[in-house]
Length: 64
Image 1: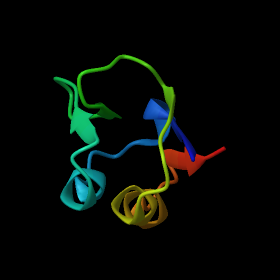
Image 2: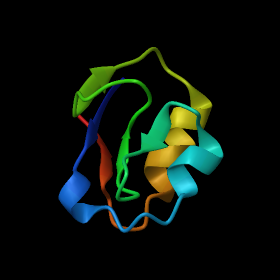
Image 3: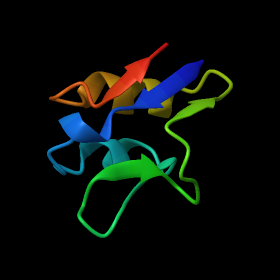
Image 4: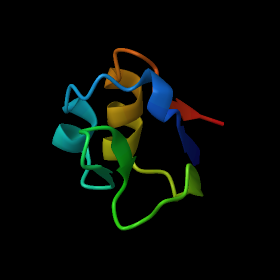
């Protein structure tokens, strides 16, 4: 699965990190991948990541 982050849409609600430790936040509270500055990454199928993407209220996380 390929996950993309759209930081401009992030409202720093914290749901994604609640569901998956794949996600972290920058100094402004905006979502990013843990230990990475990339905006798109590919992962093997994972229920926690999928739940985090689906839970994002602003669609700052999307599947490609």
